[in-house]
Structure formats: structure tokens, C-alpha cells
Length: 218
Image (cartoon, rainbow, N blue to C red; front, side, top):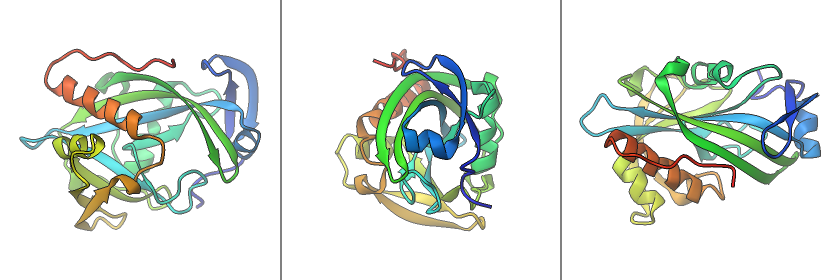
């Protein structure tokens, strides 16, 4: 099974996320640079005394940013889907079922990035969830995810702030094998450093019981 179906239908939207009442297949959407809707989900595992954030290394078969490290779960909304519907991506990609009521909003983000197929223009709803799930029980889907990483939140923040060049993380492959790995800034999707830092700081604030300002499109 391929990492993505180029015929998967997407609802087109404007750059503010308002639906246009038109549907196009994924391959044409990226080729033509149409605005469409996507979901990012940040997963924090809080079973341990020190929380960890789950990161994924994208499959090499992906049509956007193959082989690079990204948010815990990243996916598109299919035509007709709501954001709540799109939470299916979490179970499909990393084997973690997440109910809408278990999430909280980090904001909404607009991206425009060149990709080999054309231009990826997304309006992303960014959510987070905190769970006591065990990292070893997650199941990265081989067609979607090359590996999952459990990064201590404090270490991920230090890396995002430039205070550390690399961090050591637990790694989980699609076969369920646990190892360790090192991650540096060069491993991540390019251009996302400010976004990643803002999300990690929001997660840290949430865990501390502090208020944070959700992202807006502008």
C-alpha cells in the first residue's frame, strides 16, 4: 500500500480555511498549489515523571518531506471530513486512538511550501493530547512512518531553542523494536523551527497549568 493515494479527494478552501465547495484529488491539489485542510496532532506521554513528546520520522515513500522528522501525527482532511473525523489519522499512523474530547487546541496555521509535486498550501488545525499510553505500545504504520521517537519535552525544547545540538531519544520502528537515536535540527522538516518551538512551549505551559496564546493564521 502506498504512503498516500494521489486520487484521495480533498475539499478546496481559501487561504483562511473557508470551504469553496470544490473537490479535487490529492495529486492535482499539490500539483496546482490549491489551498486545502490538514491536521497536526502533538502527542505527549505523561506516564513518567518527566513527560515526553512523540515525534515521527516520515516514510521515505511520502510525497512531502520524506524521511524527515515531524509532529506526532500529520494528515489531511478528506473531502467531507471534519477535524474530529480526521483524528482517525492518529490510529492509522501511530496506533493511538484519540477521542476529540481528549484534545486541546494549539491554534491554526497556514503554510506554503514547495514540494517535488508542486506547492503544498495547507490550513492546518493544530491539536494536542496528553495521555498515559506507553511508548512501547504505539505501532507506527510502516507505509506512513519510518520510526517514532519519544523525546523528553525538556530536551526537545532545548533543541528547538538552540541550547543543544542533539538530543538522545527512544526510538520505535514499525516492527515494534525499541532502540535509541540522536536527533539534531537537520533531521526535522525544514522551515518549521519557529512553529515547533511555539508548539513545544505551549505544551510545556499546558502541563504546568499556565495559559498560552493559541496560534492564529496571521
